[in-house]
Image 1 (spheres, rainbow, N blue to C red):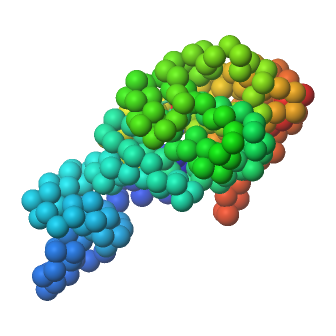
Image 2 (cartoon, rainbow, N blue to C red; image 1 turned 60 degrees about the vertical axis):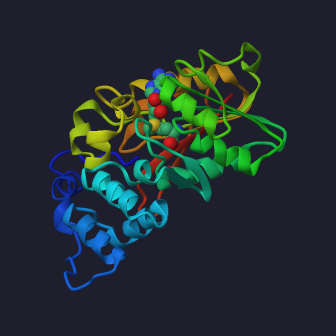
Length: 283
Ligand SMILES: C[S@@+](CC[C@H](N)C(=O)[O-])C[C@H]1O[C@@H](n2cnc3c(N)ncnc32)[C@H](O)[C@@H]1O
């Protein structure tokens, strides 16, 4: 997930003006692929050619199915909901309407969590959604135990389909008590968009993805603060919390991390130097 810039920043402007980014339609073209790409471009899809390829692959040879899939995308449904799958760090997971679509920018956090997870260790993915982050960990550390939670029953059902040991409920509450104090890595992509900024998200997210997956409260840090407390209960001394966030939310979380017994965290930044997450060790 990307935090939208404060209005009227570039992300907000981009969100409002997405159709302007469309590539020009090629009316002369007659192939299915080109016809689909033209429809997608007209609907405001900025990567119309790539999306056309994905929709063609999802439809197989069935033109009626293809038409229905394209129509859903034209209505703004997230591409991954329409195709039924998403990729995170090379791991393909099922996705479906109603459940947050894993974002490529979460891959670095998931891979860092996998690096820190001992071969036979224990990891917890809080707010697992489709279970994509948990799947990356399980793929990287097949001998480890990876468990997950989510408040949304739809998400839990999907994560279970993706092979994740998932428990339904608020953060760490539904987990087996035997895990408390024995976890090596807690990783999470929680909802962290400030409530008032949701309107500036791209249309796919704003109009389709569940608010529960996005809305982090007035500052975006309401769930983040509870995540820190939960991680403090779950981790053993020296264990690691990896949490996705953005903007300047690291400052807002510093007090909670200190109070829960974490050492000063390391900032995880993307190639542009923007804050993408925190890595914090307990004790
Ligand atoms: C931003 S999505 C991330 C999903 C997944 N980790 C990913 O990266 O694809 C946040 C998820 O947190 C879940 N969620 C929101 N509040 C929660 C809470 N209090 N406890 C557990 N899960 C929660 C939502 O249902 C949603 O699936």
